[in-house]
Image (cartoon, rainbow over all chains, first blue to last red):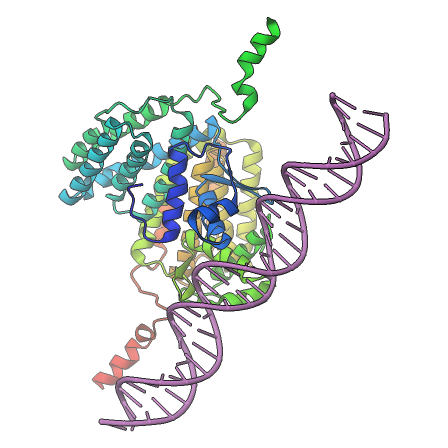
Length: 233
Length: 233
DNA sequence: CTCCAATATATTGTATCCATTTTAGTATTA
DNA sequence: TAATACTAAAATGGATACAATATATTGGAG
């Protein structure tokens, strides 16, 4: 992971979240506390604290007495998450334009550069992560901490959804949306920003396969076709 | 408290939050874990989990190795919180109008009724709590769970701010904003809703004394006047 | 052989214990 | 008397131990 986390807690949080993005942990996967303890060399006290945070961010689901699993947002959930992002990100971008400094522009361009590098090197999870970081950082330019924090949560959920619903191979083509947004923001072109962001978010949502159930875990659906073929044969 | 919390955790959370609204716990007040343990008859494990949740909702501040205190949002923080609320609540109200059923209307009217009863009986904290519940419930009508959850967080922070910055005695006069909003929503008058909500939120923010520091704890500011008077005499 | 019940194992939930850090108190000295 | 260093008490942070619950396994009956 390329993030420098402040505390060890944050680092573990990031490692788990990163494993979700890399699809080494798929939705529905069980997160056994004792295993996480061994992996990270800490006691259950720490692990349980991190699982609580992850659950509040809707990245994992905490089932009472039955342990934690990676969340499986339904298609409708994802639509709502993106609707929320549109509300926040389009609503705030005018302020973003107003407050954007050259230092902000530089940070954003740097993220886009690293994002494109990740895409070209086939680093899917890195690309998802950096795309998320871009949106959070961009929103932070508006200098409204609560909104940035709320967006951080939504982006975490979006990233999980992306890892779940996006067709593999997709998202590995560089597109200019992010850099175009940076330039429009740096130029203070509020109206153009709004349009770019609106189209970008719509495109991002449209690229996901929210129709196909995508149940990687449900063995029945995975093997449904072969079973049926055998039955009719 | 009039909330029926699902779990004991939630109930304790609510009790602490309620104490903040009642100003029995003022910003800066220390939350000693062992005392909370005694009060609620649970171990520190539980208390620490609840303090973590409260800190993620920015109601308490968790200072490493130095314990938890009630958060003291600065005036600028409060402005940002209200800016965030305007973004969410005004942005979502069109959807609220679209989806509002008669059952929704009834629930909302009931809350307003209880809120006015609280105001007239001088129950300040109950009024603040019910006002918050009204906004969260109203937003929930739009059927977007993430947005409702984000607003819940903002409302919690607003309520703390209200308890901090609102002039005592204020807010104890019934006004018709909430019931007017319910009626406009029930009537599907999207544009009118937008205006009512915009004015309502502006009024709510304006009623707070964000200029006066209001540091109840800072003895220097509390005694600043008498000290200065003595010095010049 | 399959299904169900009983038992055994494993996992989660909570309380407690120990180590570390902070805070309060006290005494000593300039 | 004021300031500071030192000591003692208390609070927090983390790990562990114990209790409650869920899951897996085994044995038996149909």
